[in-house]
Length: 120
Image (cartoon, rainbow, N blue to C red; front, side, top):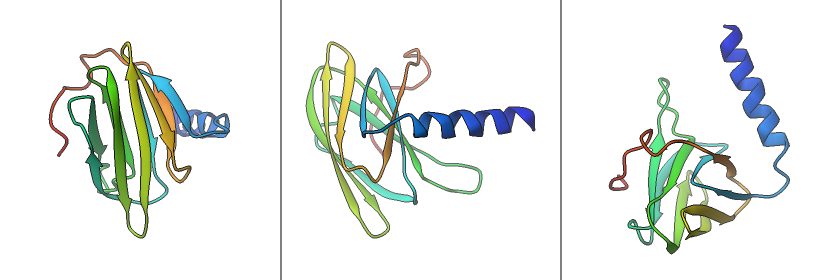
């Protein structure tokens, strides 16, 4: 119970510290205020995008992981809105810029955590 509260307060604190919607890391978490219905990636060989689903079947989070250097775009479809993002990978670092509806958080994770694969 304490760990859950600590995790929630940590995430909330991180969200408050992000004044702009910009991230620069190997992997990023994108958190939406509502369920994500579809994600389209222009070039799936540059980034891997995985929707996270909770036990309550909420799909409000994405993990974006860099695969190789290059530029691409993401279109994230919410219930009533489509959010556009420009993604650039340079020397393994991921840079995401775009709509401020979805929060972008930088995550430094080892590459073994996420499998590199298709965006489904």
